[in-house]
Length: 373
Image (cartoon, rainbow, N blue to C red; front, side, top):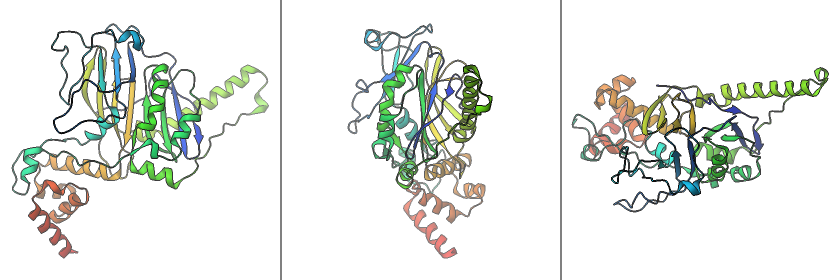
């Protein structure tokens, strides 16, 4: 367990376009030894069940000694290998070269694996569970997401907003609901990835907010002119206003992202960095984010991207955690949640997870639920 932080980053005042608020994150110095840039997953091969379309994959490139990474044109000559499928990559490829680049799809990968025990079948063959659940695991059903093109106002905001000097990240708010965050190690990386935010996936809540609300309040700084006698006084007041905004933003607007404790699962190790997926404890009625991050040796984010889960997705995660804690036994899980067995099955049904149970069990328990009402 641990928390996400903006260590090494400074929060700058946000810019508002209608209902969209973009809050920039700035680094005093870029992260040495790591670069992120867009890159298609051309080397991953074609899966047996069809083909993959990747709106935009990312490539992380690093040096083992922490020195600066060459520009992409020269880095293409460096020996590389690629992560294939979902298996944990080895330190070297079959040809023996050292790996200096890895490709990944942050939001999509995190979204599809946010369930804590995804793709794992029940350990005990309880008679209520379907054969499919045992043979194929609990692969989550596809969740509905919306590309940024459909989030009203986002494209215009990304096009007209100023990119700050040294900017290495941004938080995207829709009607002051945090939809996601992007952090990169270098300002050039952010400039390259800034337009790709329109290609990212956003939850239904964010899409609805973009349609329902048409404006967000401006946070206008107020300076005390009576205490400004020099340029130095003016700079001091501006710096104080920036500090106040950063404290308010990180503690309030971004509190749903930075406040919770997360479970971190390491997906890849690269020199002094770790590529990890993070997920929170699933609590009802709270803002919930999942995503991927590249952390340095001190746990500071060199790269970070998040996706905000819907209440339905949070409910699924909470149910699966409860089932796993009670060895997938329905009666024990119902007692754990303070529910009756028919009520638990109805909750599984409403969450789109009842396909894991035998059809006759679902029909019987739902009928008992209706009779009880």
